Image 1 (tube, rainbow, N blue to C red):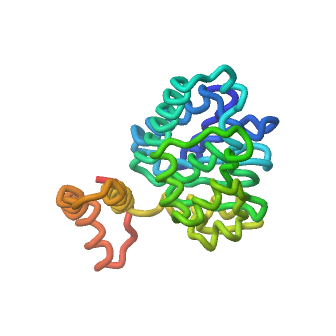
Image 2: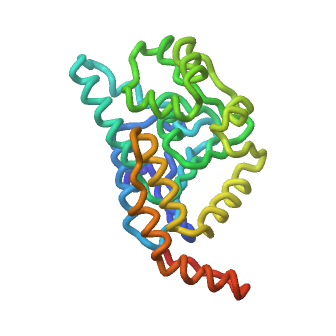
Length: 254
């Protein structure tokens, strides 16, 4: 990791902080790579239960990709760039454990792509969401990124955001279902949500994420392997007995 992307383990959570506050946390290619590595790390460590993403400085979650990196781009460079972003966002969307985005300030362009890959999003009242490329750079999005925005906001709202370059405020994002909560004390709200997620049943959480991925892929879904894994687990058997005997349950994730 670089100084521009910080990682810290707090309890059962791996916290990733986008740390370029002077540039509103605009992403460099090294930061994207660091995010992909964090995705691998959280899934590889059984002691980690949740991945938490946030921006430093209070002005922005992530204000897109650093525009300086686009100088001299050709059409072929654009194709390769979008493939790289697809790979990183795909890795984030594929994390087996819950991902929480804590959003304070602007969430723009590539930052909105990152936030759209989270499972739960909480934000401050000052948060805003946009992809203003129709009036800034005149670039475009890959079909995969566009699909994520459509799933997150619905097609009519996503289209209006992109075609008119309009900004969605926190209240509209809440009403659309994109946000779980708006909180004046964002740190307190984030800690509460992290604790709630980290104390849940790991295999249940994995199963929901996995079946959502399969549903989003389209077509018929065979979920027999997922259902069998959960119902055949030690956690499920132990939890049944714990529930009946009214004793606390400690999830093992197996």
